[in-house]
Image (tube, rainbow, N blue to C red; front, side, top):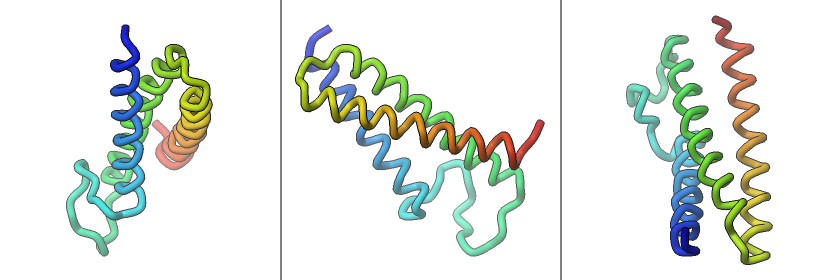
Length: 104
């Protein structure tokens, strides 16, 4: 595959991270939740929220993993690997919240 493919994959992953961070900070509504901001949400909606974030971050992780194995530019490779580590850490935090707060 060409460098252009991996550059586009990198850009798409970064855009997805920005979107997810906007959802987590409350700048954008989560597509899986109703738009009622100040009301207390039922536990099933909170579970859907964390599950949505987990799946989306897992998809971003896969894109970054593909990029990290194919990017040859040293600075971009460093940034890609750092971002990959941060996404892995955040993914494990979300998974921990899902496992502890919502047991099967």
